Every structure is written in C-alpha cells, then in structure tokens.
Length: 195
Image 1 (tube, rainbow, N blue to C red):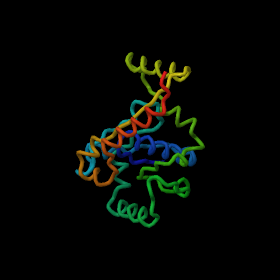
Image 2: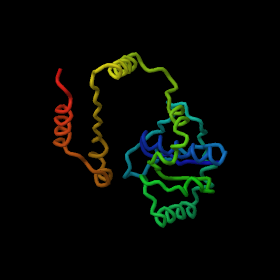
Image 3: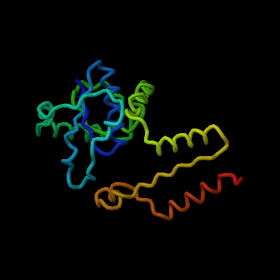
C-alpha cells in the first residue's frame, strides 16, 4: 500500500498524485490518498480543497483509521527529522524516494523526474472526467485552430490572491510587482509580429 498525503492547491496535488502513482506502479501496490488536511489546514496556510476529483485518476481515498496509524506523534516527528537530515527540497529529484519502503509519504515532489517514465499514463489520468462546458469548448476549439494556423497565442498567469492576502505566503514566495507584469506584456507584445 502506498499512501500519499495531499496538500496545497491543484498543481501541488497533481505532482503528489504523479509521484504516488509512480511509486505504487514501481512497487506494484495500490495507491491511497490522504485528504484529511483539507478543511483542517494550519492557520498560516491558504485553505484548500481536494481538487483531483475532476480527473480520471486511479486511487482510493483512505479512511481516518488507516491515516491515524501513520500519524502518531512519533511517526510525524520522525518524518520531519528525516526531511531535515536528507535536506529534501520540493523541487529537487531524490531517486532514493522512489525506492522507499515506507507506506506513508508526505511532500510535494515538484519534479517530473519522479514520474517521467510513466508520463503517458499520468497524462491519461489527468484527462477530465466530464465534458467541457460549451464556453470552455469554444475556447478550446479557438486554441486548436490558432495552433494550426499562423495566429500567435500567448497565455499569462498572474497569481497574487493568497500570495498577497496571506502574510505567511507573502513571506515565503517571491511576489512580483504589477510593473513586472506590465513589462512582461510589453516585451511579449514587442516579439509578436504586427499583421
């Protein structure tokens, strides 16, 4: 059995699932997801919800009794010490983690090397269960059409919400100024040929 403790927003949950799936396939054991933190996050964290239910993932949400076995004070402390001693970085690749004999895993694993050898399967699991709304389908078709023509398409993601309103998140993450985004738009605009 492989149990992954999910936490964070959609992107983090996707990396956690991908890591867990790679580990469960490697060990030939079923994958379980611990979603118990949602609704019970520490006050310094941005409240999140379980977000993978819209995808065709293959895993079971584990029950509280199973989670309790892995979350005794001693085991939680041991995991924290291990993370510090190994100096685990959420963006680095640590191949030894894929050989772990542990059943319960907590981390972010934001590195594709953990699941690169099963990337095709992961892409399948992250397909949507339900059909797109009519409005989303229309946008999707426009993007596909743009891809097959000479139309240039640019996407810009601006994340400021919880990074600005949550003091802990503000302290932990680099906050880009609005001037940065304006400069980025000017730069991108200068690179797109005018018709």
